[in-house]
Length: 65
Image (cartoon, rainbow, N blue to C red):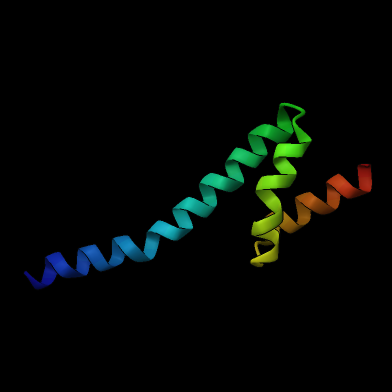
């Protein structure tokens, strides 16, 4: 029973990072498809939360206009 509870706890700890990765990758697919508005929409909240990859990609988008 204790091992089961530990497994559930680990799942709940990893779930947010999986969702963040999913949003980042969705933004990356949008960017690569030329849908910059969607990429901006996906990456902006991640960048505000401290995601350095999202911050970098937004910087590149702003630099290139």
